[in-house]
Length: 544
Image 1 (cartoon, one colour):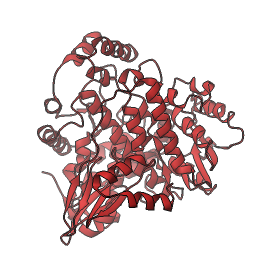
Image 2: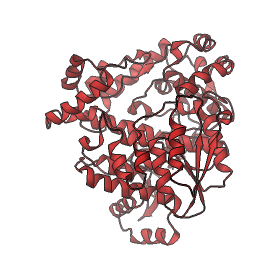
Image 3: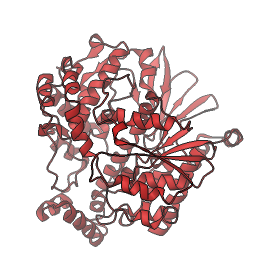
Image 4: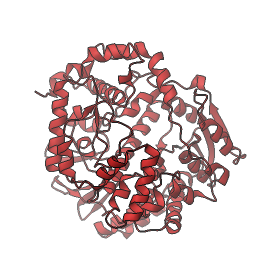
């Protein structure tokens, strides 16, 4: 929280756009900023995507907003079905995710702001340039700690009550201990899963014992909806389709529990995996500069993932550039790729649902070829590009989580790990100090040591919640079957709704086990929300 005097002080110190950029870089938290300088209006979102911006032109004047639906009512933009088809992919490549879904509503690239001139036109405002990771573990951990404490303090210095997720995982646990040091009254919330093999609840209880003065509430498994529950409840008005929508009822249960404490904000550990887990592709970047370091790191991931040696060597040294790589992968495979193959490309090869139509597959291939022909990578080196793509696409979910919380009657949600300054601090650390096949999140552990007890930092595992997903498929089979009865995706020609309906009627179908089920539901529900907003099939721009 920034008090009024601080805001006035910052504003008074700004004499140029460069100075304003420096001011933004000094403020902890996550926010949009708008300032007028010499008649021009400068609008910033966030560098890594947690605070998005969209632009439309209405009556000759450019308008910026953080919400698609606010602009939609002004421009009544037609749906681009070709752009929507790409959102069936798991994962969706960054550049395809940036294509406008509605005519006249343009997403602004993360890290880019807008300058709106007095005559109503606008131009892009480039963000900060990425820096080379140079810090060692000691200096890097100190900087991450400073930024992470600042990010949490930005939400707690106002006092009052703040709820904090304590799932039992590394990420939420670290935030909870940091928050407990501040002036706010912290309430810890844990949702108990149904899987007896799940270790989260044990670790959450262990962590809570070190905070005896902080109230800890456990949501019993009987009150935690399964995945796929309540899919067709009230609209959430998301800016774009999000696979997180399949867990909206689970999110809602936690949000409603949090609301009983009257908090100003709810802290979540989302983003810790994206920022601190690290990717093996980063070691590939080091191959020609520090070959021994690179091979040591890659061999660790190969052993952990069961990669074949010849596959590792080939993928590590093949020289294909970004555009050529995507040209070679313009036709996504059906279903998820083989898990025991190295993941050292310019992206994970996206998977296409088995129920996607030929029309959808053709539109996606055309989109990937467009990307291969026109797009530039987020960074010159492959590993850095993949890392930035992972973080940016993860950070975009902050708006989704916040809207789902608010739609359920819960408090605003904050994800400090996705704050720009936390991400920048983590990325400034040398790869070998923050990415390891054998040590779980070494940079985060070093950053919070002394705040989080050593006993809690001993955890080296992560639960995936797959048990509740499997149960959800079975319990909500009838609702899933009904979802495809009058499928909007089917009506625009992107999926074979009859085939998907048959698969959902048999929830043991292996085709439902990968993430493309999530992406398909996300697109279907987003279309239904769009329909509620008055845009129907007659306002769609189809594909041939």
